[in-house]
Image 1 (cartoon, rainbow, N blue to C red):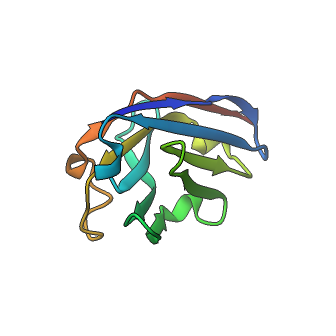
Image 2 (image 1 turned 120 degrees about the vertical axis):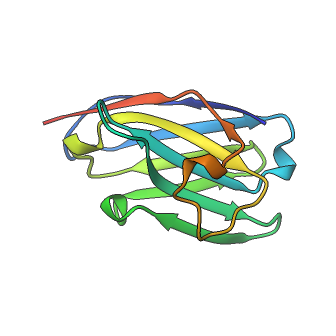
Length: 128
């Protein structure tokens, strides 16, 4: 599966931004889509995940720091996953990357080594 992230940019604190990740290739076999981010000088961290079984959403999880501010969604017709980010803070500044996997034990979704495919990142900068 090939992943292409887009939509990053510069936004003021308190603002909103939507980023997207378009998938191509064997997309029907990849039910798990996730967003990670990496701030300068820091390790990559989990942001959000959505797992779809072909008929319905199985689960959605968020990192605590983005809970109630970010929303992950997917448009299966377009093979695209979105991250809607509201009330952005300067500490949200990072390169955001999308990842996918055919399936995933929900106990391990925060680990980046369990995902089989990664897209290039899109930079989100939040000014104070």
